[in-house]
Image 1 (cartoon, rainbow, N blue to C red):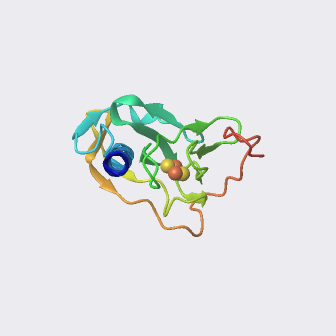
Image 2: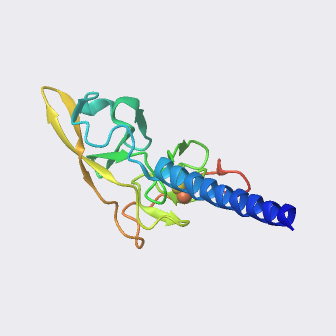
Length: 167
Ligand code: FES
């Protein structure tokens, strides 16, 4: 009888520990995914000259954790953090769009939402031009535009980079 009681008590304790570990792992994973990227709140970053920002492509700038591009001759600085759960969103050269490898959100070159679970387009930094350089304020982040009309008319140019997709 006492042996059966000990066994029950042991199993109960083991289940308690297992449940605790699952909760702790879930909390850790959630924090790890949702924590802000390294650039959030970092401040002004001097990048390149305005003439070096491509009109029809994107320039990745590691120091600002994002990309520079132009839309109607205006410089746009996009944060590479996906507005869904924070993965880095790479530029796909073959399709000419941003494609998140985590859950498949896709954005056009201007960072406008195209499809996937992201709630909006890619977030943007404030920019100024000072002494011949584009200065990106990584502490001034505005939310990307809501899903809807795209601000540029640039359909995908070829095959997508994310696995299992077609261009
Ligand atoms: S983190 Fe980009 S789609 Fe989920």
